[in-house]
Length: 317
Image 1 (cartoon, rainbow, N blue to C red):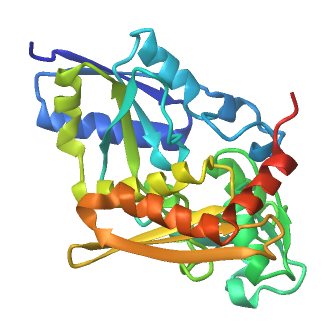
Image 2: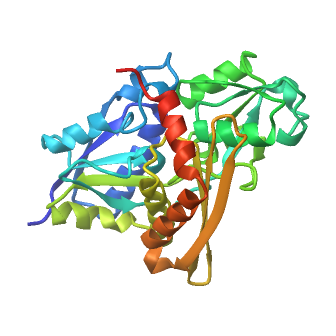
């Protein structure tokens, strides 16, 4: 049966709506007769802004409400920043499509008085804003002389806090800044030897209900195979380590010919212990590469580091 209507669930934030409307427009180009509607809503992660993300849980903070809409048949698909989508999905749902990735790097954004500095030259005691334990651990490892302070809110709110002088600089995803029209605020792209990016960062994941081949066929026009292979390796790495989006796990993936090279990192919250290694293989075996690297890092002590972190930041009952 031909698909005549497609209902998209999305977060209400400006970045989420930019991403969802891009997906909507691309699908409309490919399926001119298809009626596409968007249902926007706030998620738990959007509502609780006065507590660090790691303290309120790390799985599904930005996705559960959207998934509920699909499970009760009020939506057919949900558009996510892939880095926010847990690696284990609710029964009945699947990751149907991964779009072409934007630059996955982390970016340094500074306020007016700090324009002369890069990450390596920030004065001792400079206040760096980030809500990511992954960024925090890696930057503490390389720059123990800096002060790190949690920052919540959407990208625009964070930039306002920076410009008001609450922080000397922020670390944000380059892809999100670009999608919101703030690429000119990127002062420095942070190299991977300093900060490996989050699993799936820069890509969009389209989640859908299992058992609806007409929906899956419709959204597959946005699938970007090289991005999908890279992100499937990264997600398998994270899944095997039993990590959520709020743990100090970082990755980088690249192609050399038909070989996929995955770099992965696990660090302690204080940045004093940082384990990093690589695995590679044929791109068609992307998930096996991720599992292999996770097991390598477990053998080097990653499991103990992550257990210690879970015990430290686990939300109170």
